[in-house]
Length: 332
Ligand code: CP
Image (cartoon, rainbow, N blue to C red; front, side, top):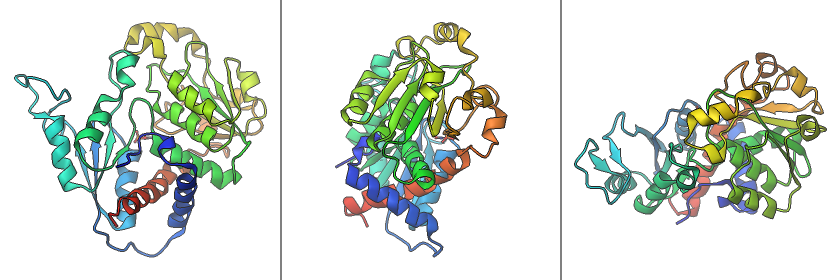
């Protein structure tokens, strides 16, 4: 059984096929045909776009979808399969996953990293347990390492605006934020655009490197990759600027130390002056975004902003992805 936990969990042929199908589904005006396909969405963290677009993607396919907010409208879950459960948690992930696997043919799971060291968080304990015990395909709706549904929608958005993105200069640009944020979105965007053959620039201050395993996978694609702390150099000539804040890997889980480390970086906001360093780039962000902190309101509202296209494309990319997995697994 194959899961979808990172962009490269679809091979090149599958990726292009899913992206083409997403565009077909986006253009369809006929009502859905009912399918015998039951899909779940299990959330350990809040969401606006993912939850709604996942449910709407299922509706578009004629599948049913149910959302479970773990610990809020279900029992408190113990993540350690070997725990002696004599404290406040009522259900172990082993039983919860096994039961959900009986109700659903396919399950999306969102589980952000916690505050352990990066060495621990990068192993994705919750997503890994769901893959191990649910017995059905698991789709990551954002983990510690990747947000592959977001990056699939981002590639769809880039293709809508630029066609085949091979050789297209795109930049992943770090921005200041009051808190150290997860690395899943930037890592997936970088890997997705490298898989698509883009000329990728990673523009970040020193101390904000991506996970070495992700960088190895990015370099193995053979696409051009540049990593720099110089915004003028990194943004020169770029057609897409993907703005995102993320935490420093060595300081992961040490929130106060991380905040201190980034205290001198507040000018890393993406505003009109930063945009002027690009070649009239389209501006992307996965949302939610801290307006006038990460991205200026002016750039968010400008004609260059693609943030609503990206958010909408979550629906179509996920519909195509769910259909692809369901067909591959012989579910529809
Ligand atoms: N971009 C994204 O995943 O949004 P949500 O956190 O609102 O789902």
